Length: 151
Figure: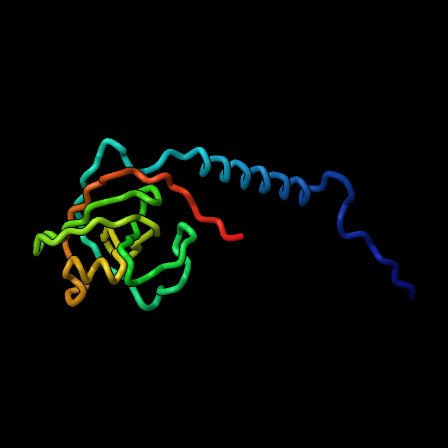
């Protein structure tokens, strides 16, 4: 008995090809939607209050969301929505200490926190031993949102 190969797929516009085209259109549409999406933040709002945490050794020397290398001793912070390079004054509401920081990363993604300071910033603000602190964030200058490209 001889076996002959039988075609498993039809040539031309099969349902598989049509499905792939639909998926590709859907991905392109989602990509355009993300590019055209308006930012979550409101530029008329310049003061935010919430809980801040800090991060350090685990991320030291790694890339931040804006493409620069994280320095745990630096004076930077992560925020979920503010544009990269936004300059903010952060005040620890427990002790009144404040410091000017630059947003260069995204986060925090734990609980209801609104800011993740570098270890250096948290040290100056005086909440390293507690781990978190209630803070007031005042926008001094809106950032350009620029991502640093590495060639």
